[in-house]
Length: 314
Image (cartoon, rainbow, N blue to C red; front, top):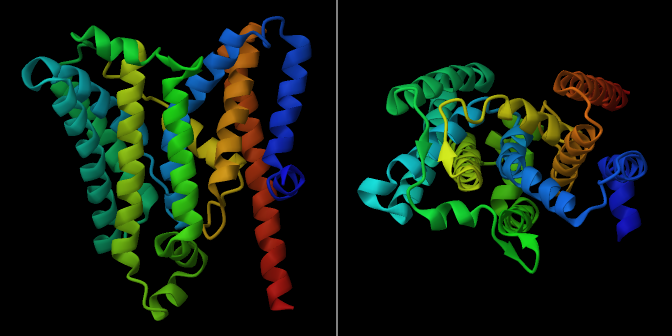
């Protein structure tokens, strides 16, 4: 089973390599507390990446997820005093779903590329966050809310467990349901999917709703760690998320990808960032390295796609 995963998902070989390098070079990498930090870091980007995998297999992309994180966190914290924590969290999650509907419907009905639609949404939603917060940070009034972000179950962070459970559920949805099969079909050949009777427009809207929900959930869980929310929360999250999903084997052109690979990409990025922090590598070097890795992966993906097309022509 393990050998099969390594052969099909080479990202896990990269994860093992990173693990070995930092276990030798970083003094406190093997500490239990550090492993918990890696899991908590992975949970935030990981939740968004689960939804992004569905959207990218469809052949689309969502650049607004970072702004959705900020909005949901602001709502979850800012509404606590007026409507209570449970209702505030529900409103936060609902905002992500509704914004997913907005992105999906605009992409479907106008025919404008999802890159452009969600780029506009990213800017617009960030503006809404600044309007709502008046450029101020919100602080959680309920101490139980803040404590939840650092709670554990048998020494495993609760937020990591949430991510793992969500990953298992989404893996099942992608591989064992009609919606999952349609996701691959739409991304592989949209015209053929239409001819097969798949309602492509509504299907894409559902996947934008999924990524919107997970982005909002990530915003809520992140605010429990911080005990607060800030208007700038979630900046660059879309870049980290897309990098993780692409590293995991999902193609930007759509039609290929899976949750196991995405989880590997998320863990790889988390280990890299954590290990470099332990080695006191300046943050801008981390960005340069991650950018270089992303460009390399995209180049390889492009070559594989081109080779596949040539083989089909022959």
